Image (tube, rainbow, N blue to C red; front, side, top):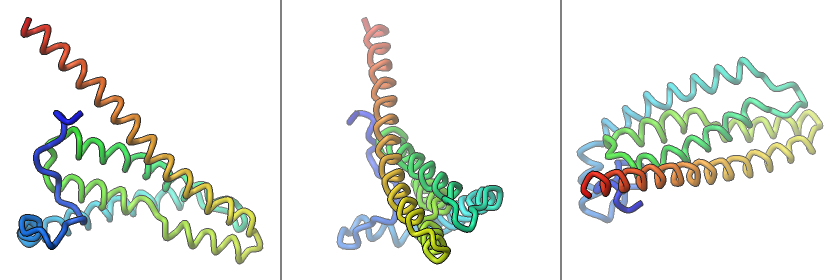
Amino acid sequence: MDELRPHHLPIDSDIDLHVERQRTELLRTHGAVLAAISVGGAIGALARYGLGVAFPPGRTGFPWATFGINVVGSLLIGILMVLVVDVWEAHPLVRPFLGVGILGGFTTFSTYVVDAQRLVNAGAAATALAYLAATLAGAIFAVYVGLTITRAAVGRRAARRATERERVNA
C-alpha cells in the first residue's frame, strides 16, 4: 500500500508548529482551511439537523437518530481517512472540508451527551447508560470497519492494477 501513499499529506488541524515547514504552511493557507471547514461544517450540521427533526427521540426513548448519525459518520470518517491519506493525491482542502467540516459537523457527540443527560433527568438512567456505551463502542467499531474495509478494497484494486501492468509489459 506504500505505493499508494501521497507524497504530501493534506493540510489538517494536526500541524506541528515546531516544524518550520508545517508552520509556514499554516501561515500561508489558514484562511482557505478555515473557510473549507466552515462551509463543510454548515453542510454537515444541516444534514444532522434534518435527520434529528425527521426522527426525534421520545422523552425516555433511545435517541436512534443521534446514535445512527454518530455511527454512520464515524464509518465515513474511517473510509475518508484511508482515501485521502493512502489513495488520493487530494487537494489540500479535501480533508478539512470533508473530514473536519462535513463529517465533523454531521457527527454530534455534544448532542450525544445532551441526550444522555435528558434521559437521566427523565428517569431513564439505564437507557442513558446503554446509549452512552453503545454510541462509544459503535463509533469506534465503525471507524475500524471503515478503515479495514477501505484498506482491503484499495489493496485489491492496487493488486489488480499491478497484475494488469505486468500483463501489458509482458
